[in-house]
Length: 183
Image (cartoon, rainbow, N blue to C red; front, side, top):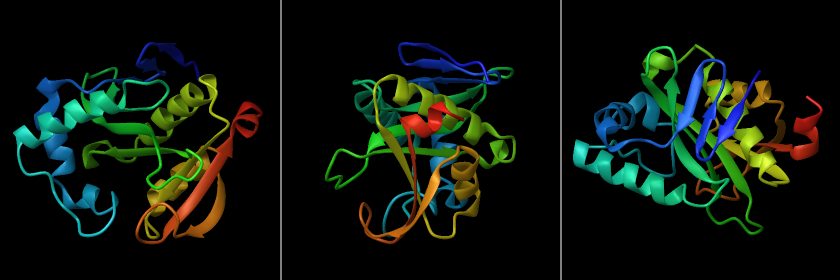
């Protein structure tokens, strides 16, 4: 797969990974206001996004969290349509003892089943490794089989169930720069 990188923009065969735009707040609300998406994100009780103002605030926070490469939270845009499919991220895990970095994704249900999560995550893995990260982790809720499948497609090794970074148990996956380079 051809991946090109410029600043905070990555392009694959079908996708553009780029910063979220404030005018896309309604789409972000439509994604993060859905139980079928939010049940797989974060710790504790599920909290759905409530309004466009909250979505705009979140987009501002995404921009702040994307200020230092290679970390960030980006929109996944379908190049052919301009529609935002969802989000892909590369962030330091919460409570990370050694600065461990996590890759993650969440897409609108209308974008599920097209391979967008795998394609976007592959581009972000390349981005992270090109910027010197030695390894990248993924953690999923125990029952999140679709995201676990994406991890396997990315060549990530399953490390079992951990209670390390989040309050509840998580399935843990990892890939090193060397492992990624030989794929």
